[in-house]
Image (cartoon, rainbow, N blue to C red; front, side, top):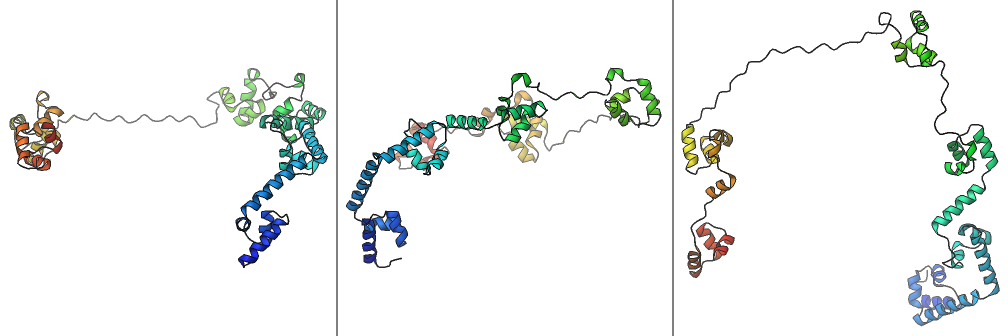
Amino acid sequence: MVRDAKVLSALVRRRYREGASIAVVARELGVSKTTVQRHIPAQERCDAAAAARQRHQNRAGQPSEKALRAQVVRLYRSGMPQQRVAATLKISVQAVTARLDPSQRRSRKEAARLAVQRQGELLPRDEIIARYVRGATVIELGRVYQVHPSTIRRRIPDDLIRPRGRTPQPRTRPRWMLADEEIRRRYQAGESSYALARAFGVSPHTIRARIPDTDWRGRPARKAPPPPSRPPQPRTTRSRMRLPISDEEILARYRSGQSASAIAREIGVDCRTILRRIPEGERRTHLQARQLNRPAPGIDAESIRALRARGLTWAAIAAETGLSVKTVRARV
């Protein structure tokens, strides 16, 4: 790496004028591309870019470039993907893309369809049909040939397609043809219900249904004992709490304007205890209780204006009248 700035600037300009690109100069001198651009005059870089574009245009009109473009278009239209065209012509994928017009490029959906079609053309159809006829399923053949089962299905004639579902296994003997005497005789001889079920191709419950309860060797069904009956509990009347004051006095205090919470706090009991001693018709609503507990002082607008004329602030007037500042300002 060159340490001297003057020497570095001279080397950068000389290599750039010789035709090396900015990336090549930066890699050779061990500096960044920004450093190389800083040592090259802007006009010189603009002239080099214009010359490069002109060379590219001149190359596009050459016979070799026209022949290469024609080969790229021909191979791409035949169905080859860009990667395979690039590998065939030994050029990069970017070079293939640059030689194709946007109208000539295939969409992703069309490319996927062509890929599936090419892959399907490579599948041995006769071999697939033969293996399917011998008993292989569509899913198994799809795993073997690494394709989707629908791809295998399209290559099998419709008259050879088997019905969907499992092939029913032949039963040893139909259920309605079971010989109850034989089942009972073999069961009494010592065979288990599971062995008989396997032999006749039925479930053990079917074997159990054909054996009398008296001959059954299994454990009898256990019945849950009924729950013990509980003797009726005598109903006890709850005694009412004795309060320091009578119910008449509680009602009188409540009627006078004292709240149930204040009465309960004074006596030392719960508020609901006080409410139970007040009749339903005597209880106040929430709005009535709020108006009773927070009475509005009789302060009119003239009184507020007089206090304001004395020089008091809104906060001082609110503190003196017991109202909020918002209420005081609203009453003026």
